[in-house]
Image 1: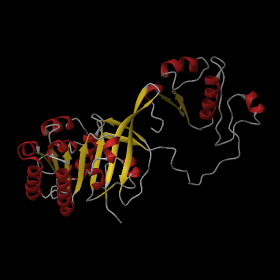
Image 2 (image 1 turned 90 degrees about the vertical axis):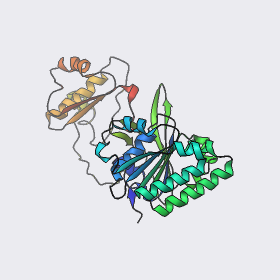
Image 3 (image 1 turned 180 degrees about the vertical axis):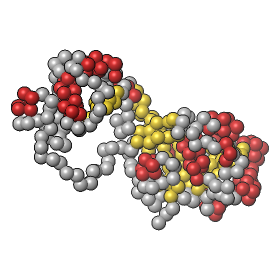
Image 4 (image 1 turned 45 degrees about the vertical axis):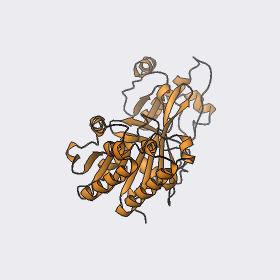
Length: 331
């Protein structure tokens, strides 16, 4: 069984069928601001050791001191790891002075000095500009991949690639795994999405998965439409009261357990009120309930609830109020 490299985020590891394969070449791609560097740092701070440190190599995109400065705001950042478990080095000078051959020489020297278990090159796409032609870049790519494979290290090539690059740039063929970060527009809002474009020798959860960026790093929410609920669970035969006695009679004693009921109609006819009757009747019977609202906040809903002698602070009643503008349905 192939060993796996954990991101520290269980839902992302599940999408990757347990994590990224170890000792592989992984590409993390996406537009600026999509979280490529943050995701890569999640991996290195979680997996680097003193014996097998992470070697983070900056090219000509961002100086490594800037990368470190912004990384300090992240919860997984460990200042004590810098220089021992996580080592930042600059390839920019060698690249500017000697081109791609200078990069190889510098990488050789750093590998010999640190014996890393993880190697990051950020930005990898920037290296294209220093190749005289496509042939030179392909030779460089072959030599670099050979070194990293012989080292038995997990590598991350980070870059601002787009969809067109995946069919033209030769590094996409060399990579063992490709994680693409981006955004998609849904009505009037932008949703961040993560896709696995390639995972050699392993299955993975295909499609677009939503994610958010926070101080904890990337938090990923797999597509809920994909997995089928296969676990066994019992459904009772006793009907659930609607909370309205007359409606219970019309529905032959209420709602079926495990069923879904749509209450629809124009504004002001009592849709919310019917739902509240159900929730508070359940709480009274010792059955906890959730009110998930995309319209009223707690203060607004309390005005309705209090008018009928109920309370949102009643045991067994839980309120989840969200703005529909910033809802990720899979989250």
